[in-house]
Image (cartoon, rainbow, N blue to C red; front, side, top):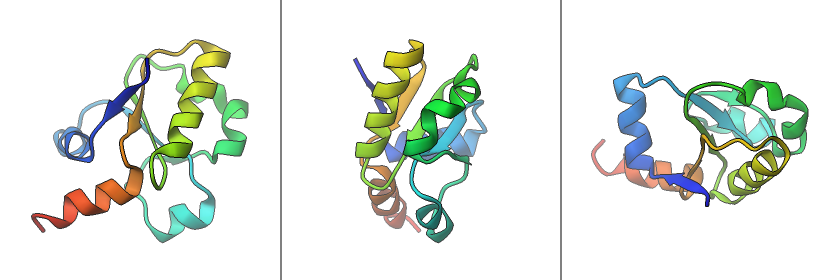
Length: 103
């Protein structure tokens, strides 16, 4: 079963400095336009970079709407059996909406 994290919870984890790996699975032009940090690994290149996911900490994947990151997690779980992957629910759209509230 896929694990999800909300934009609010991710922001809290980032502000606390929690040890995690943050992966943007969008295309480079999307990452350049707006991102919340982490490493850019476009969905099409993901399986070639499986080694970066072999860590003992949570890995949060994000895209624009949360769909490509779900696909990414499915592929990584199927190929490598990872269980520490989290999808940012709603992606950057949800992040922008959640972070526009109080700022």
